[in-house]
Length: 498
Image (cartoon, rainbow, N blue to C red):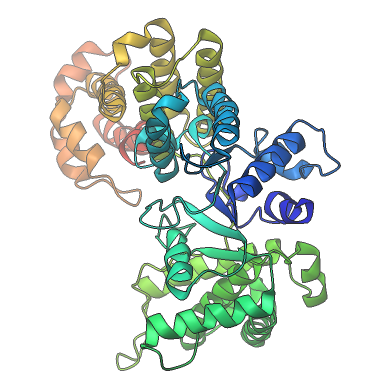
């Protein structure tokens, strides 16, 4: 069991999306052969979390997610079962941990309410569950949730039991196969027992359900995936030995590079999905995550270049027009939409009957949001300032925001900030506000939509009469456009474009 948990807790960070950052990680399910096994696993994880076991959580994981792993358990409680009383007592204890973790108040008598809430929490379809404080990392089950359960952010199924029937395998595997976002495009299965028997059972099930009983299975093992990665890396290096060499390729070669890098991206991501992957093994290939990201940066530049200039041969189109998303990319960035979604979920939690919110937890969440707003401020101080204002208002009067659409509130504040800057500019230069607004919202690639029209709309006589040391008209027009481009637009551009 300790070896199994070493794999789940310390060797599955990529599977669980830990690198995506707080609130963006995925969930996993551990299925075992009995309720007793499920309870033993649960208790062992709790000892590990409390530092009472020889197995310790990897420090790098703890730095990213200090509360990892957040766990829950679910199993059937039968009144007729000989061990029913023991199972009920254990579940009562586990419910208390769940309630303490999420501020809920579920009891054994209403176990179905708990199960329903656990399902909703795992599915993350409500905005409040986008917040890290309301998320689960691992749920331990026997048979519950292995069929008919839909959670797109469930990335991995860990199996510590003998193989199920072909139907059971496919149904269990299907819990992980829903697309979630650009970071989760496939599910992953990890088995711990009888690998040869499992491989045969999985292949038989894949053949049966994909080919009607005929054909070849599509499962790939570690050696095959490692070989595919090695081949993809060698191939792309024949075109571009280093990332910097990619930009010097011809248009035709660039098109090939795009295809080859996508192969590398797929194979590298597939390789990292295996538990026995370790970044240090990339040293044997002279490759690293940093090398991948450098190639990825050149890939993105080349894709944009090919979109703008596809080349000279119309019979051999090279424009890349699809929406392929990189899957081996690790970097997580806090952006506008992400914080708005989290803030909306937080506001919904304030009005939830299932959640008890004390002042300490409330202040802690506000502090976390302020950290996110600070991070956003490095790229966009304007939007960061708006978020800070909203957080100040929530802190002063949380009831005021209950039932509100946070994105609508923030968008109104953005529009108000834009209007204030436009009005100041229009007043200073004696221009009609609507004309300034039109140019601001149609500003593109550093150029006004119609600079002449903007200059013509100026009331220069009024400006000259009201302004001491007024500029002559030719200097006035030049300074007007310069200030619009260099001072006004840098202030408001982030408010307009997210």
